[in-house]
Image (cartoon, rainbow, N blue to C red; front, side, top):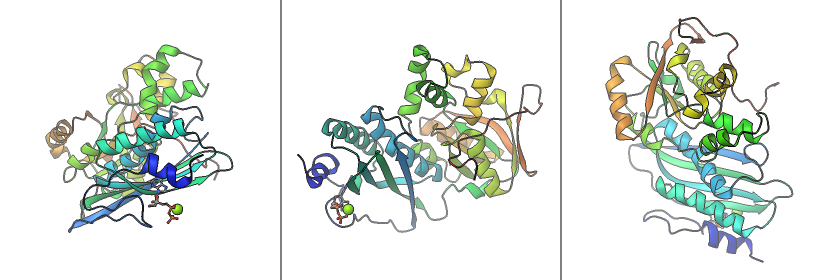
Length: 321
Ligand code: ADP
Ligand code: MG
């Protein structure tokens, strides 16, 4: 049976890029470029809460890092490296090999090498904690508190598919193989918008990544910037598989559905062409969906300009707190 150190050597040790000290010492070391700030973020993923116990381990390795890279993207930061904490209930080497493969593949794609971590046995469930480090030119991060009244509100990619896949897998929606096939990749293989976030520096005012649903995450920008907003429901980019659903589930998925890992950002109207140019440079799709208002409150307007009633909420781990 492999020891903890053999496991780390086998699955989590990769040659660190020149100039970085990776796995093997008490700390990892990386240089901080002059004139830049370090951006860092942690996400904890728990079995049964953030992923299904039987999820494909390669997808889980990918997503564990993807949700963290998405936070760097939302700040406009360039990835430097990451560390991985693992609490494993059992030693399942094929599982670990697949998890590591998914993790390292995304790390390589974004130049975000795994440079350290911690591995321990868990009495019960599997827990995964990833911390990412990135760099951003001092003062240029895309902060939530930097939106201004009258900004356009933009969304990258498409909305709704991850929520529908989650509800199908969780049994909240009746089984539908075709719909699951069309939505599952959005839930299990999110693609963090790192290049777009970096390209938006100096163009966008504020940004957030969509982890808990558009209304809730946009709400964070509005609260931090002390603004309101109006969105036009007919402008929202809806994933094709979701567009065919009835009004209620479609709106819930698009406005309240989490796990999207696309960016929502604000930018002055004078920057519309610059936003589109940044998006094409980053091979991303962006859609203008509304605008911020000096008056607090978030409204979603239908095709006739009437505010929708009964807006879906986003995800909240402590809804009764
Ligand atoms: P320490 O006892 O000093 O915490 P460990 O024995 O836990 O060190 O880890 C040995 C080395 O392996 C360290 O460099 C640590 O960063 C790395 N490491 C441990 N677990 C992981 C992991 N899951 N992923 C990447 N690196 C890891
Ligand atoms: Mg340790």
